[in-house]
Image (cartoon, rainbow, N blue to C red; front, side):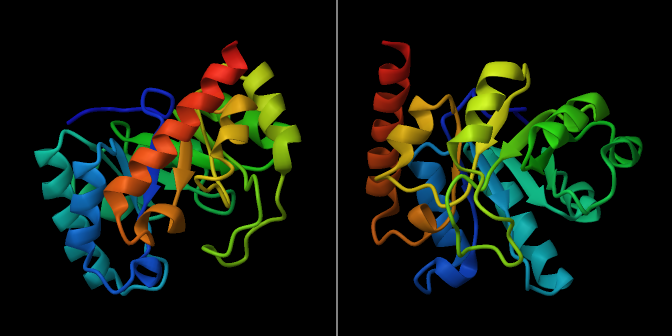
Length: 217
């Protein structure tokens, strides 16, 4: 399966059944993949593990059909059991070197909120980092305070590591996120909560392309 890193594709979508307007995971994921999403992260914080396993297997089959990359949030055992492409963890999860020993073939990303954490992630061998939250977000509990553009600017100017900007990013503000250096942005509610997912992906991708063009002008 493809090993697609942030920056090789502009949008990184995350699942969240609470925000999906009552639609099934299959329906939402298919719409995202049909719209050209190439990195899809399975993130369902409150679901029982048995349900997570079945849903992850479903996404593995779908992403294979669309040549897309499947990343699992937090659970290395789930990523391995479902033959996923990647794992995304937070600062309080198992350290990267330990995860790498357990799963040397997985693409591993880690959320970071400061230059020190970003530098540590690079030293520990992360394949990519999450940078954020850029704006306030309601899609994740116990989230840290927004880092704004200052940290994003630092990463874009100082770190030679793929990264994805995340946190409160919407179609109306993604232009500025891209203009500040992001080549890939992660979105949750803006995509899975859109009545027309395909149209929202197209709108968001176009706004991001304009931001990148403005940055490079």
